[in-house]
Length: 251
Image (cartoon, rainbow, N blue to C red; front, side, top):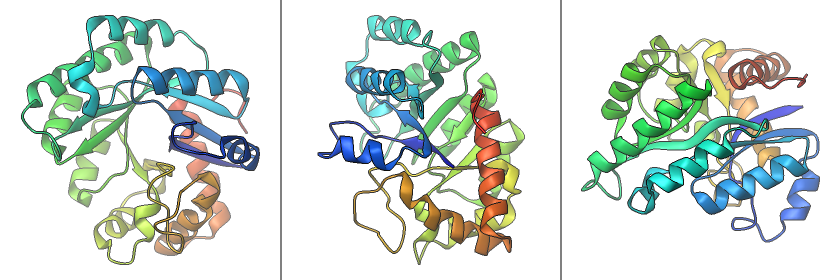
């Protein structure tokens, strides 16, 4: 068994969704929504398949479309027992930096829901690491810093406030020395395994459509970096996910 803590496996991303679902029957997948439509998709899949769980939320790229009514819908959906996190949420200043305050406001409102319902959050942070840290430092919810791309020093700052660090296919990229250093320097207990499927397929499959079966390549690289055997690494990363997301009954 392998637990994928961050994927986007739904019809809008895969033409062969039924095949992918069958392929992943021995995997545990935390499927992330990013807007009203995909939140409903991941909820439906979680309700249908025992090995799928849902993370629901509003991605910062959708901030201009989100209303108070959308947040009320999200709060109602959080009552589904298969929802294990609020995500994918956060800040993204890479493509749009003229609405930073609106992004922060939406992020904070979803963090407040996380505190109210005692849910962890899955955080997207792109070109916004200091603002992301400062807001999480204030609200202190359990946070998975998804697709971490910053420095070891920044990772340690997040860990000190209760966050874990999401590592996926980018650690296998030949020129990605920064993420390799992060993995090298962090205790294995502070890492969560993810794909960001269908994106960020690892070497040697880079550029193809990703799915959770490719996590074996990520586990191998992490094991090589840490000087451990792959089974030890996988068992620990699975346990991290079970504890962080409170995946009752998963062994």
